[in-house]
Length: 317
Image 1 (cartoon, rainbow, N blue to C red):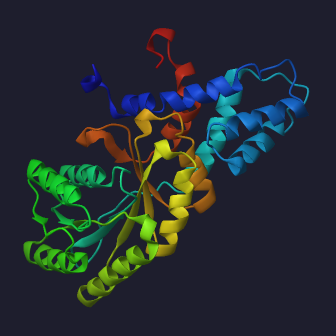
Image 2 (tube, one colour; image 1 turned 120 degrees about the horizontal axis):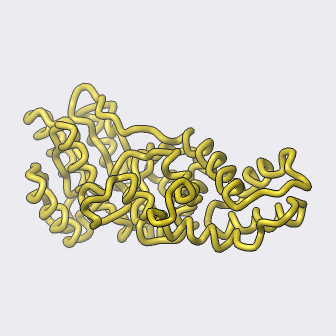
């Protein structure tokens, strides 16, 4: 059954827990008249859905515009929330373009261990291969043998070359070799896995700085992308991760994963509002095709469950 679902349907299903949580938080708040007390309760309900206080305040202000003493249905509230979320998300929806010259375009993929970083690299590679780009992986997370082995398996499955080293090896040397071989082979995108040990920020910062110095000797524009992978199930902790990685790695864009298994997908909006970093893609499943470009309207309506009201009852997710 899942195999036949379109990406939009899978994405909407992935946000089901989030929209369901929002519905539960809004339950009972639809009254005969919209007053100050009701607005406060709606604002609290939005914060409880991990949308964050800034986003909740924006939505509250929008609801308050000319609405006092008027009745709003649940659908109308969801539609207003969806419109406001789309406005926020549209500002950060940035496609991941392969436009570096000379090639290869170097992408450092960062994130804490367990965020889905290595799997996301595989999905990103699959996505780029579908668009006929040449892809190469670099197993730069030498801190964990498991990460090296996992990326090697994915590379074999996808049929892409991979630069490997030993556990505890020098990641910068591997990246240097990747750029060298990628240039010789005409590779378009060089995707580099990196260590995710935030518990030692100084070491991580030193390692990333060394990678940057090495890249600078080969291509002063590299790395072209520093992509932070976030696990949606961590909720507000994802915001703390963005803040720290911004300090140590100069993040250029975000990918959020595991949106299919959480009621905390609203943190995607909180991240957009607070940091304004480009969001390139979202992941809503374990399959290779379950990472796709970020669509702000579809995501806003999926988070709020507004799309469900557009469908016959038997088709609602």
